[in-house]
Image 1 (cartoon, helix red, strand yellow):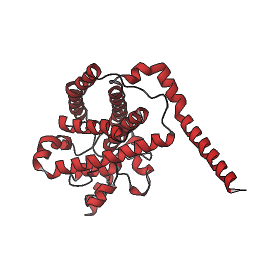
Image 2: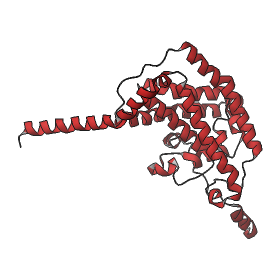
Image 3: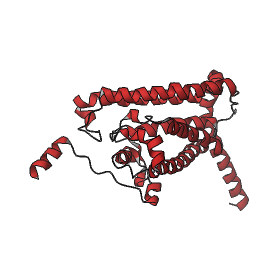
Length: 290
């Protein structure tokens, strides 16, 4: 086979791959634009899907929290099996979450709706590679930003007391602690989640997917469960922090500052591995043997 023929075959193969890759998301994108274009273009759309995603996840985990004391099949996955999430815990965290959304999130969303023009939608969907790399890229950038913010707000006493101590009122993590935040921390997280896709010039479909992914893994970090399908069990080589490491941060606040990946804490010397959690029976056995 001549070099020219080989080059021509490679060009055809690359073109076929690019076409098939683009066609993966294009039908869904076409459907969304044809049937929901006005909703997609609204500045309120990212806020609505983000809040909805959070409420669905919190509802799911809260139901598990309420069932866990009497359902061993659920309790076995709890990080702290001897501690119960009470209605008082749920009420206090839900009250602050509602307050923050009504006082800050909702007015900001309405302001965008009033003053920001509708978002133009590109006709073509992103390629599958661009879609996935965009989500990964935004997650990596967000992870670094929040690592620095988090580290600073623990090392500077005034910042910790004024803005971040509120989040650490709960040493036992459960899903509603995810947004048990001061207004400044809520604004910081929302700002990076919005700006990072713009910095990386992501397609709007990638942007929305990143927002939902960010909420999913943030809630999972605080859920208080170590499920077999958790991200830290799916990502190899211990690269993902996950619920266990973030729970360790709430137990030992000077460690594990990165929200998602584990490499910044390894490099910064702030990483710690969570100690194996003993059940009530195991602790009683240890006390008898002591």
